[in-house]
Image (cartoon, helix red, strand yellow):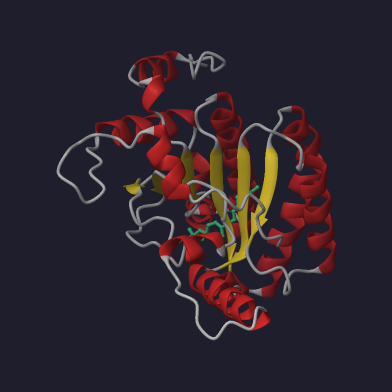
Length: 280
Ligand code: FPP
């Protein structure tokens, strides 16, 4: 399969970088901590919200690029964390509005491109209008078989683990079991991301060396790529650089050989028996 044949380079730089990418060794799942919108705006003496608007453009471009790279079958974007409520109300309101605007404008495009939208996080604190738009978008794209676009919204990895443990306990209580051995698979299957392969590549923009409570369980073996580029400037060329860097790494999964897992092994790692994600 020629994984990137539907991607056309827009300029010389993209062409050169594309030529360095091995289409058979692309990550299956890319996760991104989109950071630096505020600093991008500040450097231009613009209000922070201008940075978020520019951030949406960058997200849109990355979604399209990943969807065209057929082998990438999941892209997870950290759009709003459980900690982000600490920002000024005007900024939080703006981010929520922006998300609704994005969904309204882009849903037809997402759907037409066979992308399935999934949202992970705690839905309860989200404004009702946002939840309704998300529900609609997830319903509309539920049957799509192409790339999964996973938006982490009101998401925190510790909260996800707490929710998973409570679900497991609830299950034990419900079944009247007095004890039940919990293994890694049980935990994976009760995370919001049940059914998704773990990310192979975690990208963080704007230079901070932190994982910020993002997918803590799932990134156990992910390659981490941190770039100084601020999120709104993270264009296709910068993404190709991340992929090239990823392909230079020797992934050992704790072992000694450089052998990548076979398709069967990565399936096993993903515990895909539960294919339904939690709705957020
Ligand atoms: C970080 O910038 C970004 C966010 C808080 C998330 C918002 C993301 C977007 C608007 C991108 C669009 C996403 C989708 C799914 C359409 P920051 O404000 O933390 O920047 P700073 O660290 O420079 O202040």
